[in-house]
Image (tube, rainbow, N blue to C red; front, side, top):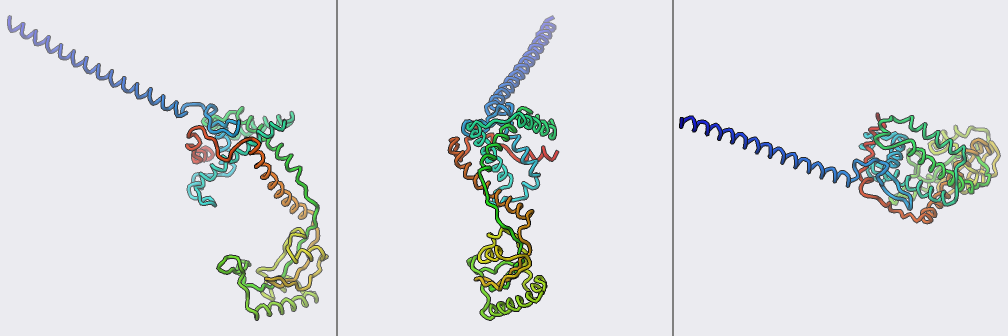
Length: 367
């Protein structure tokens, strides 16, 4: 009987040990779960502090004066520019910008400046009381709908780009365009004569294969021919003039004297050929020749091919006016930045802009 008691005690002891083990195991598991929960809560806290998890429309990226720019709007600008420029990951990876910088960073900087310009000009447009007409408002909404239909919906959702966002950005762009158009309307150009001339050149300087001057070590000063060669060029020019006066074809003459590589037709405003060619561009009639003209670098004979081709004149004047308009706008932008109280250095909110990569947007476009 004593043995039975000892056996029962042993069984009770074994059961107690097993129960203690289960309790210890359960306690250990609870500790692990508590630690995991704490880590999770901490991660969520860091995640929220970093801005992750917030909707793009609530993440402030930077400010331009009084205008706040949120991530959804930034995403829209980047997406549109990446798409319009046809940027691919391969292009960004294997191409270097003209200033030697990384192409992705170069375009990112260009987009940043574009957004800032829009915001400054939008501020000025509001200040000047510029408003859109009903027809323009209708165009804004139509353009926004068209854009929304051109991009995969899942991409728009990822980037937080809603129709309201697109509509507001387009409305601001329309206002900016009206502001810029008002500046361009102030730019006027006087009508000018236009001419196409064949310029037959007999250079006094050494020429490269592509028809440019051979330069000295300073990269500017032309390499002059010998006195004997210059005298020969003068003789060639005089003989060519006599042949032209007798009815020879000017292009055949260029071939005969070996100067066709740097002779040919040039079209320009008559006052833009440079001295002394502009003087003859104003005076010559169609199919007339100038005498042999001497300049520091060549002898030349001019033939008037066509005077005042209206289509070409309008085209050239259009380019000329466009250049003047861009110059005027550049001047006004400097003034507008000062008026809006915006510095040239962006006022970023946190590191959101820094963390944006154009490579991510090439993936969306390539889809």
